[in-house]
Image (cartoon, rainbow, N blue to C red):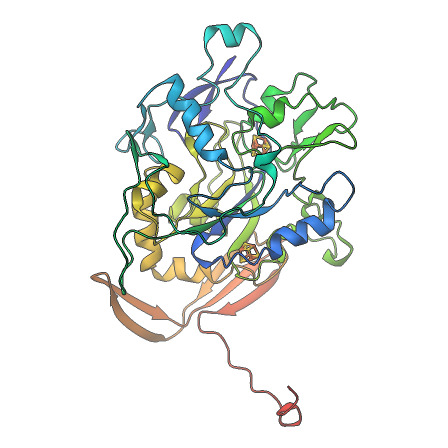
Length: 428
Ligand code: SF4
Ligand code: SF4
């Protein structure tokens, strides 16, 4: 085991391999609040990559309903139980610690195995889901929280459970809630799947940090399935090897015939009806830190505005999928999922500043990867109070630039009005 730096945890941690970092890293931001669970992303992925025999239960992209839903069922609860078993009641953050989000004082999946498990070659805690747990990509669809049977691990490390038994009244729901969680492989910096593979069949690409399984080396031992805390590698019974999201790497490389050579976002991102997704590439230095890139939309949302947070950072894989947390979920639940940055992220989302609102408006305006943005200031169009905070909206123009600095998209905060031409007026 080597000691590596995990910036999301604000501390060093154990990992089976020495640190080695790619030049660029595939990363994405999802705005949970905008998702309508239409599963267009799920179907875009399935119809591109997993439509063959043996892949019937394989959903590299899925959208599940929290808190009860999961694919495979219970993946997050079971993961948290394993950490709690190794270090009971201590999966806590020191939010005033030195790290970017504070310092995680609990145990990661790589630190949790016992000495005996390590002797047997176990590099992380994990489990293989049952066939039953893989059956549904969105079990308990639209089922709101409300019973007391699920455990909750807060950012203070304490275990509790839900106790929301009252009925709800508008305008504010305080007990009953649900939100969708959109999921794919996080192309982690310290992948549990890669660390676990006894065949060394999993690798992380130097050019973009995408994590792939070499189909020729894999023998289907399923250690990746066991030790990915997000349960994103999947076993295919017809070929008896494992498969996982490949981040549509031909598109990211600019080899999709429609891309004209320009790096493009994955199929699930490009298809998103709710416009919740933005994917890109971020520059990484030799120490694994993100190189300062102030006007990259991902760098801005994650590192400057801090509105988008990593999914279950406490697992320790340094996932590269980031989420704008739900504004309706109880904060303790979101803190379990996204760590101590939750309060700031939700408060900013409820009343975004001028620059944040502009960058959020770039979501899904183009299929090409946006490497930089610029804002041209426009007139004030609205102001109000939101939760006691002053909010002003300006009709700014936001411009997105591609890899070589060329303009690829231009949009305004207020949506333009299109008047249907007279000849089509009664066409529907
Ligand atoms: S999410 Fe899972 S499958 Fe994807 S890189 Fe991380 S550990 Fe591996
Ligand atoms: S396409 Fe977008 S809005 Fe629809 S389920 Fe997927 S992430 Fe949600």
